[in-house]
Image 1 (cartoon, rainbow, N blue to C red):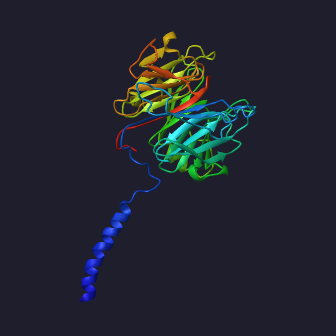
Image 2 (cartoon, rainbow, N blue to C red):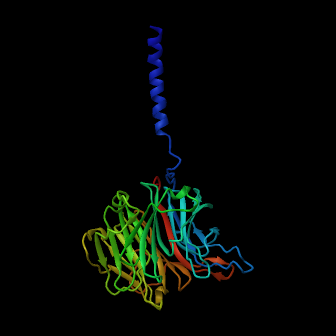
Image 3 (cartoon, rainbow, N blue to C red):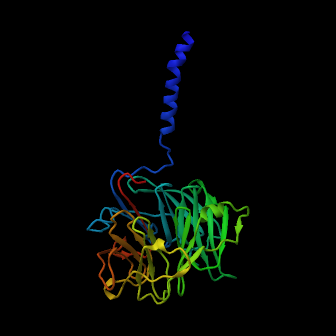
Length: 368
């Protein structure tokens, strides 16, 4: 009888303990934002190891990016191990920044830098992913469902052009040489990338570029038996006639707006293309921008990357312009030959560095 009574008391306690244990937060989960976040990460390409100022910083953090001031005052800067920064990507799920190298002939660097990020946006080096196949990493995106990093690589000018997506497992814990889980060979000249749930969006650069859409890309790739994948193509292609250098793009699910950068080869007439109701395009077709920001007043020269505030009611488009050596901010509603809402330069002293890539962490309260 005493044993039975003890069990009656103990069993509920064990059950409650198990429930509390199961409800504990996983350390790999991102913390929910307690207040709105608008944090812009900037990657710059300068690297001069033989100069007197060898410690050139190539990652800059603007927080908040939606402030009316939009200034570097109080902003953070950091020197990663990249020999000149190229594309940059942040994931709150990985709590990490991933940055590729510009990889010039003068400074060979086929690595991807991994940096941890705390709740205040402060960075710390946590690893390097290297492989000689990483010739020109132009797009990065973290797949939180499977703990994978996707890397778009545009390897041009060798024995033959090779356009690939590399899939890297467990990117936060890898060090040194890394063999990709998959290398997906493509036929188009890809540049930027973004995951929309399981679907992959890639920008197609060059004459009459656009957006390539791969439905269920994540599951299809991870079901492959072989490491080298040659039988995956876009589900449909959205072509934008008259474009020359679509590179960076950004899609906001809530507003269903996609923005993309474009410029001609001489880099004197940059523009930002805005496509509303983007998800209504479900088959191969030509796209006409809803609005285009272009003209002398915009100060756009060679925009390489864009970022859109993805929150409900988001107001801004951010542009990394390598020609102007500036970050330009426009209103999402802008059209035509309009002046930027704000602009800033990053660098050291009077030197303005060249922005190659940006990523905007925009989250509302209680959002991951």
